[in-house]
Length: 114
Image (cartoon, rainbow, N blue to C red; front, side, top):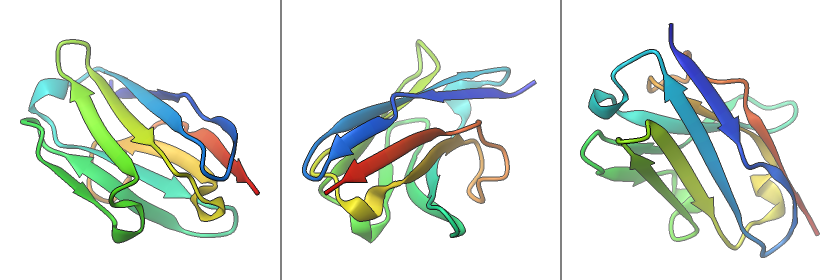
């Protein structure tokens, strides 16, 4: 079955950086478009970024120029490099296999403190 395990979250100050990872298994990762979503406390699931199997990327406007999504198809791993973090980036971050975020991992908490 599909398994997605996120890691790399933590507490960071405004302006800092974090790198999230997602280990995927149970499906043909190299053929699947992958996504990052986030959910702040008390809010809905928000799309953050997507990457095609070939590496084409897409971002929500609020993270453009600060976040970079990448993938390693040989290791079935999805990554999200986050720089110049802002307090509004505080959320639980999920990787997902669909564009609604219905199939996602357990998430990793990112907290940006000012």
